[in-house]
Length: 403
Ligand SMILES: *Cc1c(COP(=O)(O)O)cnc(C)c1O
Image (cartoon, rainbow, N blue to C red; front, side, top):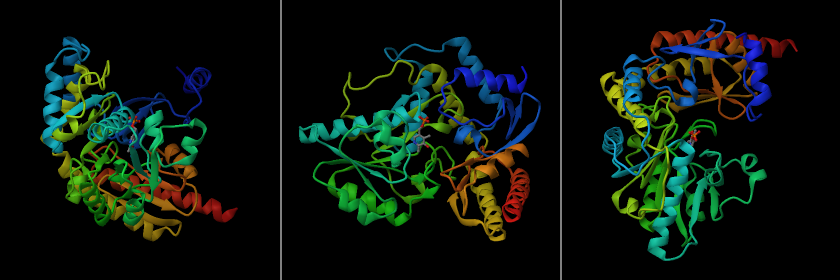
C-alpha cells in the first residue's frame, strides 16, 4: 500500500491521541528500521526504550515462534513453565522475592500502588494512606498511574483521580521529607526520570529517600520501566546507588517487543496480597513470559550490559562533544543508553529533520532530545548518529539565524 494512503486511512479510524510522524514503518534489522518505501532509518529510540536486543534477533524470534506452536495463553488459574522461568530470572536479577506479571508498565504501576495500599491497610487497619510522588515524573496514563504522574496538564481533565497523593521536587530530599505524614504509605519515583527530561536521581537523594523510608516504615517504589533492564549499564539502575526498593516496577525492555510489565517486592511486602486482591487475564501468559525468559538469557549470552557500559560511555563522550560545539545545547544529562540533550529551543523540528535524514530520535519534554537506542548499539553507528545530528542541528540553527 502507498504510504500516503496508509496514513490517510489510519487517520480516519485511529483515535487522535498522537501527532504521528509521516512514516509507515514496515520491518527492522539490528538497529535499523525500514519504511514501506524501503527507506532506512538508524533507530535511537528503540520503540521508546523497548527493543533492547535490536530488531529481527533470530534467537529471540525463534523462541517466540516455538512458544506460539506450543501454547499462547492459559489464564493464571493454572501454572505454566515459561512464567516460572521468567519469574525466577526476574527475582534473582532484581533482588526481589516475588513478582506479578502485567501487560504494560502502567498496569505494573497500578499493581505497585495497590500493593503499597494493602500493606499499609494491614499494618494500620485503615484505608487512609498517602503516596508521595515526584514533580515531572511519568508513571502511565491510567487513573491510578496518572494520579502519581507529575505533569499537571496530563492530569487536569481527568480529575478527580485517586486521593492522598502529594508531589515533591525530584532530587530535593528536604522537600520529600516535608511531605511525609503519619499516613505516608509509599514514595514512588523513577531512578532516572525519563519522559520528564532524562534526570538521573542524585546519589544523595536516592540514598536519603531510602533511609527516610526505612526509618519511617514507608515503602520505596522504584519505577524502572524505562531506566531498568540494562539501559543504564546495570540490569537495574538502583544497583548503581546501593539501594534496594521495597517494590520494583518494570516493563518496556522487559519483553523486548511483546506487551509485558512486572511489579515485584520483598517477601514481607508481597505477603500483603492474598488470593483475590489482584489479578489479570493475559498478564504473564506463556507467550510473553517465554519472551521475558529469552531476554534474560540473551542479555547474558550477548553481553548486553557490557555493551551498554562501553558504548554508553562512548555515546556520552560524543554528545558531550556535540554539546560543546553547539551553543543551543543547554545541558547534557543521562547514564548509559539513556541520555538527553536539552536545547534552548523546542526540538520538534530537529526531530522531524532527523527523521527525513534517516535518523529516529524522540524528545523528553519540549526542549530535550532523548537518546534511547537499542542496547546493542555500536560505536560506528553512534558516530553515524552524531554526524547526522550535527548536520540537522546546523541546518536548523542556520535557518533560525536566517529568519
Ligand atoms: C513508559 C513508562 C510507563 C508506562 O508504561 P506503558 O508500558 O506505556 O504502560 C511507566 N513508567 C515509566 C517510567 C515509563 O517510562
